[in-house]
Length: 132
Image 1: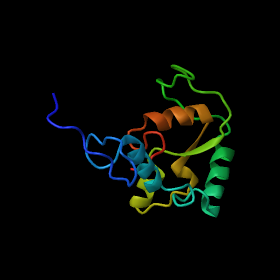
Image 2 (image 1 turned 90 degrees about the vertical axis):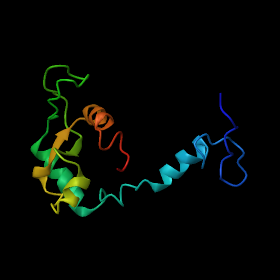
Image 3 (image 1 turned 180 degrees about the vertical axis):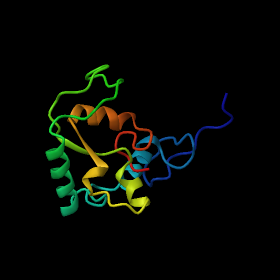
């Protein structure tokens, strides 16, 4: 049994409980969304990235997902058309951190949208597109 009630949210005008202190769940989620970078800030709307995407999709017209755990094609390669140029085997952020050019096509692979969504959702680094 708790010894005291949770403190209220620290956002002015909000009286919702904040069990861990600080902000309530809704305001904590809003603050996290504000900290997330938009695609332009992540480097996804540059001429270099547009060239990267075009080169990867030209090289890989069919999805390159070979993940045996992918529910869209369990145990066999995917045969859908590629629509997404995915940075692989490391993320765009990791390439930049290593001093490598993330816009070079050899740092990418073509995926169909469903395979890319499944891969991104399971990836321990991005976990669904967040910035970490």
